[in-house]
Length: 92
Image (tube, rainbow, N blue to C red; front, side, top):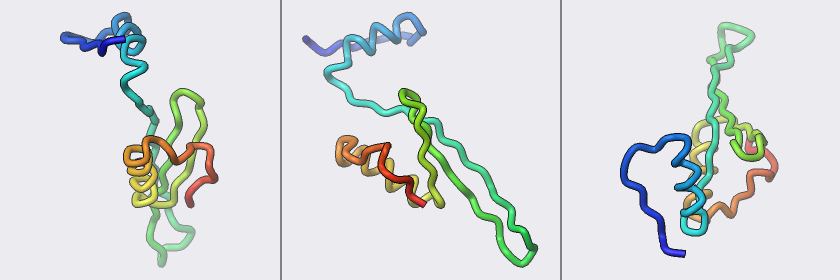
């Protein structure tokens, strides 16, 4: 199959066509990123940001204790071709 290139606006109907033609040529991951701030129980502690990624295909979620761990996970997805399984134990 030759690569399929689309020029123009992506609409819901032609998006499926794009994905069908490019399925063998492009690997992709789609995640929903959620981030929230947890406030400490006492005023002498600082608040902490937490993160999660949800795989849009499987709906599995993975939690992260800090931004560096989120970025490390995503970097591994890119550099290793997705070798880091989303189902591995959460990084906390």
